[in-house]
Length: 257
Image (cartoon, rainbow, N blue to C red; front, side):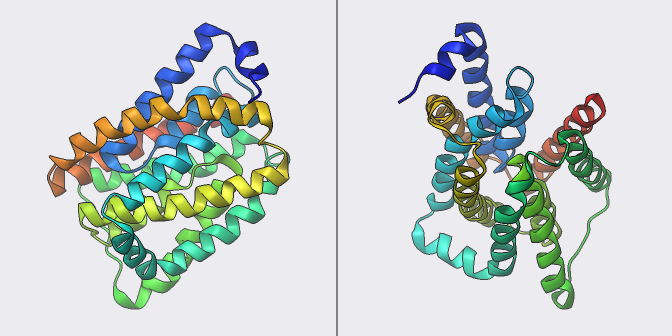
């Protein structure tokens, strides 16, 4: 392994990165998502954007696989069959948009993602309950998958569109956690392949990302224990609250450039 990048970061910032991974894992274990959003926002405050993106990839892949398979491979496959349209479109758009990392300004991307996410989540928190009926489910799934994949390929963040989509479907807590794990696992693996091609993933950045894996998984385990004791309504409200905070943070980053 190549420790050149870790050595250049220094012990203080490396400690901050480890603490950030622990917190991001805890939030993901509690509500099923937000690990990439928290890690990219935090790491990018003291690392170059491409290094920050690379840093979250190994924890994201492993954490998502754990989440997807927590109820067994059979349950994970059943969830994948139900949401296969969203999944296929997501993967295609991740592969295509990952090549735009060096082209599209990060500030534009953060605003594109942050404004609708925080707005829709806040509206739902104050009482609006969107519903997707059977005849509209296919186009909504395709549109949400395309948006999630486009944003995910560039930023490593594709959770909010999926979470809003599942919330609108009134998906039960256990199923929502499992679907998120399945979709995020497939997307994270595609992200690895895409960024091996884009040049974001290098030996030093993979070493950094691997160093953040254990604290992220430790946080994930603690978060799972919290989530297991949470009822459906509280789970929904906490999910939306995390979306609001995450969206506002993305807007902040977009406005600050």
